[in-house]
Image 1 (cartoon, rainbow, N blue to C red):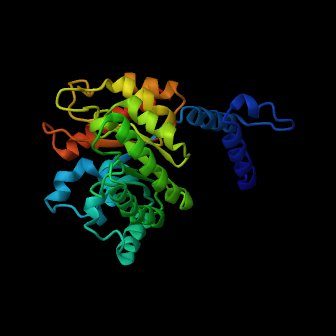
Image 2 (image 1 turned 180 degrees about the vertical axis):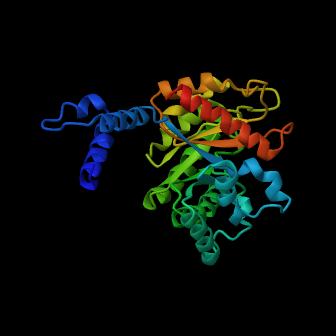
Image 3 (image 1 turned 90 degrees about the horizontal axis):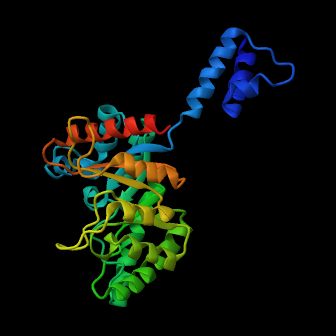
Length: 318
């Protein structure tokens, strides 16, 4: 088979992803080898998983905090040691170099040169976007601008923020809507998503956070449902399945939190099959980040166990 014909059939296969379609093309006669190859192409495309896997840097926070791994080296470690080519950063590990153009240039070069996708930056410690004090709230908004700038430079699509504040549920919700609305305007100008994780306090109440999203009403503002962060207080925990379901309509990412695994490789605190059946049924597609936080397994072992579970789910639900 000559190169032109091979290229033509490849393009047809990618477009149709179906042997039955190809056999109906007028004037196209396939050899047995061509038919077999195209059938395999169609089958592979038909089984493409509805989510991709990324690695959240927090999974290695102990290693990073101990100085055994540098932020610049994290992406290549994700790819070489875990086979993951999409990465999520955590702001403190930039060590206040997020505005250093040379630093960002070096990080981008390393990822570009190695075919690694910078997906998002999780931003912490920049003030409360739901602060009751208008001046403090605005300062928190402005503190996040530099992270949107850094995300844009690195090629990320998203920053993850927190919707925290002190006051009644209604008061903080109103303040969070105002803070996120302002920040999302800046995100929209730069085509960077601003997403909120259920991360303790009111934000771990799925209905409350969904209400914030409705109030902001900006396509560049969304959620990052985390399987494990539904503790509202020391005495109150929100149902994780209900919470994820409520946040899915606004989700621009999923955080696959994991702590421990049984002998069959299933996460012991979250029914991943139940979660992903629900996520798929909602029609959601996107990137799912591994965020291992366990203590029984080491960080690297925990990451591998989580990836193995997600790989299995991809195959089961393809």
